[in-house]
Length: 544
Image 1 (cartoon, helix red, strand yellow):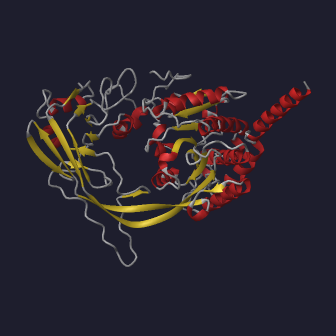
Image 2 (cartoon, helix red, strand yellow; image 1 turned 60 degrees about the vertical axis):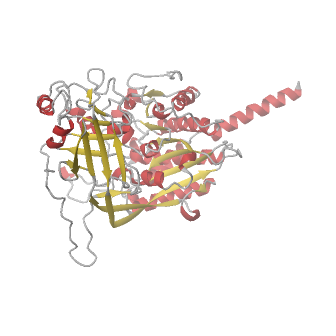
């Protein structure tokens, strides 16, 4: 009896110790964030001294906690190369309609983006006309009943149907990304803008000549990704191109164009007898290079079989810097401190790294990445995904934190709410792990999935660092408390942060990550896309 009491006492003590080790400390969060969002760091702009100070501070906290360096040459820092690139584009599209073929060159009836990736040929024999190419919800979904995966998708209408409103403008502008990234299209053909400037016979823009020694050519695009990557072909078309593309169909392009201009309903159909070949042929010249840094730490797992696989955690530690011009309306504060964006995620990630380092070992290893340059275009995460310090195929999931310290629009009703995006898109199992992890909390969060809805105009799934991992096929979850009136303003200050809420979200991320790190097998990647959206809740049946 005495022995049994000792065992029970020992187990209870161990459980209490584990709970203490796995709690995210609000006092520490406040200390870290107070420095990271201080005027001393001048808004942590990418390429600034302030961001360098932030990187060094994060590294100090990792070293103190015994987190292993995961960057270059045994350091905590991964240098990120930001390339400004000129492109010489000789790409073309050959369209064959019922045995008759025509070739359209870049700048002559079609326009390719400046970055077409590595040189290759892509031939698609299935072409779908998707109306306006929009999914606005149950009342208007041009993709309803269409399997666009691996096919060329074309749509019309610069303004969308009459149902389109100003708030859905982001969805209009993002139709190419939606077709490729959401629907899995093998190519996307956008209609001509108003007006289309790439007339047949027109020449490509003349190169900018250097003005003198040390002068820099004007870049066509900026990237941190590999220039030889395979990028899904996308083009902007002209009337001439589309007339030929639709020449074999029962509905003629001129009639469809007229209906689109009137914002009337458009039929959706397969273009039979059409084959499209994209010859991607672009040369690149790097005209200037800038450096910034990711901060990377690793906590090694304890299982001999699983320690070389990883659960990744991320946040971006950069912000928008400070205003250099004349301040409006007598304002005196020019520094955008970014306490919530994304000082809150940055500080919580320090807490997560320390908690994993000081607590019981997980079976898998955990890797923590503070990404630079998110505000400028996901620079750090895109570079990390293309140049990972651990094999990218060994990362089983990525959990991303961005703006987790406030209530959406300062609403008191949001005090226990966290928004999550993406958990169900690549792995149904990951979504269900999230639900179980939340249920295990002493005070479960209210998880709102509205931003995961494919019809949500904010398109958050594509706008933070988690997407750089999702694009590699890695299951992700994005955690946020969403926007508020201080977003990207000097008023985004530490005094407005809810540290208790930050800590509870950190605990949810910890519980989710720990479950992932102790799974026998990596979460199954079934790629079923978003199913839990506005109003959704609970688990997804894996048979669905």
